[in-house]
Amino acid sequence: MRSPIGTHVRIGKGLVKGALADATELGCETVQVFVGNPRGWALTEGDPRVDEEFRRLTAEQGLRTFIHTPYLVNLGSPTATTYERSADVVAHNMRRAVEIGAEGVVVHTGSYVDPDGGADRHAAALRQVREALLPVLDGLDEHAPWLLLEPTAGQGRSLCAGVEDLAAYLAALDEHPKAGICLDTCHVFAAGAPLDEPGGATATVDRVLEIGGPGRLRLVHANDSKDPRGSMRDRHEQIGQGHIGTTAFEELLAHPALAEVPFVLETPGSREPGNPDIGLLKRLRG
Image (cartoon, rainbow, N blue to C red; front, side, top):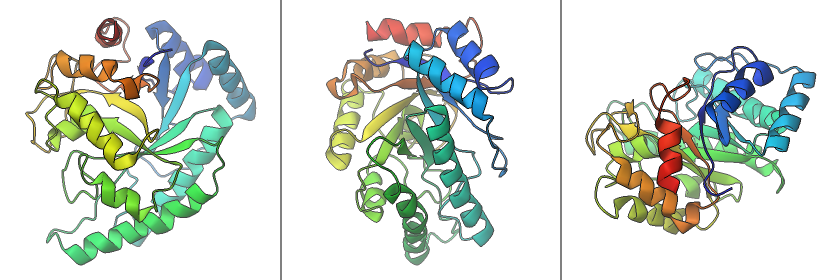
């Protein structure tokens, strides 16, 4: 299916009775879930029977599945406990991805949390990222889920805000072949990408491809923005109701390199019945 479209869904009632049921009701062609508390450190184990049923049903339906790691994860943190817990959570989520049949795990690229913005702290944070993620990546075979790096909106002391910072981040991981990219439209717009200009979305994807190489861009988080370009504010808006506008999403959906890349919504209300965003993206896809 060309550019499958879906949204992040709740898992409160379980993977099958909650996430999959909601995805089916919403008409999702792809879906994203948390596999634990998104605001906690607990490493939640799954039920093997439920995992197997979810894996089987999503495969039968062709529903492409992704996991998002909890919001607390920050592999660049100078706090040892935060760093260690973050590394454990990423490894745990990668294992859960195998168990539920997800094709990728999204990880925010993090912050080096230095009020002075020091170069030494930034370099140390990238070394931490390397030390945490390379062992995980090296343990993956070609059929394993992807680790998907999601640049942030530029708030705080971001290690990777927007497109250009991807080069150094990927270099820290030796351009590992299982390190993929999740492009969040609100994030890159907030970090300065000209998605609101004609041709801007196309140029942004072209630059991602230039930096990352073919096949590394594996997922798009499709979000409009409540704030103008360059605001460094991560506030999502419904498609066409923010400062990015529908033309950018039409361009993205028409880009040849994104023909098989899923688009997952994280907009206000996108997982509620009657929300127009999934239908709108499908119409823009043509």
